[in-house]
Image 1: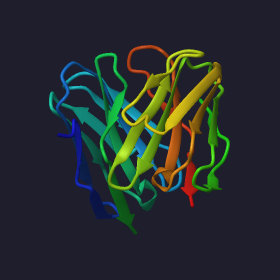
Image 2: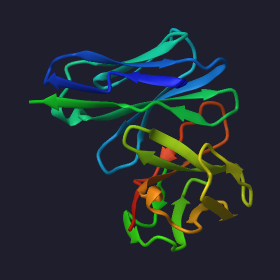
Image 3: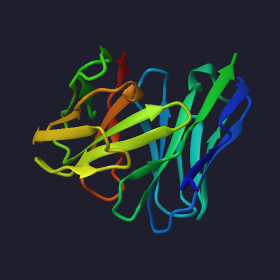
Length: 109
Length: 113
């Protein structure tokens, strides 16, 4: 069973159409949940770290939230340049990161 | 800004060859990682290192080895390349400390023919 599950696998939005990406996790002792953005042919780029339930972080049109079992990445009024794959990863205890398989977002003009 | 540099963006090798992938970071990070990324499988950890000359196996170490002779450089070695090692390889680094994010290079797309 995957410890980190992202949904949907792919999402197509019109420019300006807000939506949310989900990352659910089953680890105990969460020491951090990380969101990354990955453009085609490039490495993941760090966006946010969340540590505890109720925490929120914002950057431009992106807002990440965390509960005890999942995190959401809300995208408000997206633009075509927001098109990318968004990856979620969790750190349990002092272990390494476990990544989800990602959500591929396409924003059409 | 943290910069993680991988020596090659694209590499084509033949089965049975010994292949070296190099990664250098410029932020004096203690921790370095090697992943491979495949469609439908996501990022999987191959090896990591918490210090010079230290190495730890990740989830899929078989067929790979690593070398960390200097703090800034972490090398991934395919001892005898096979076609199932065709993949995107990503290197990352991070400092020690609670919640520090990993910073990634742009990857090496390796094809084994």
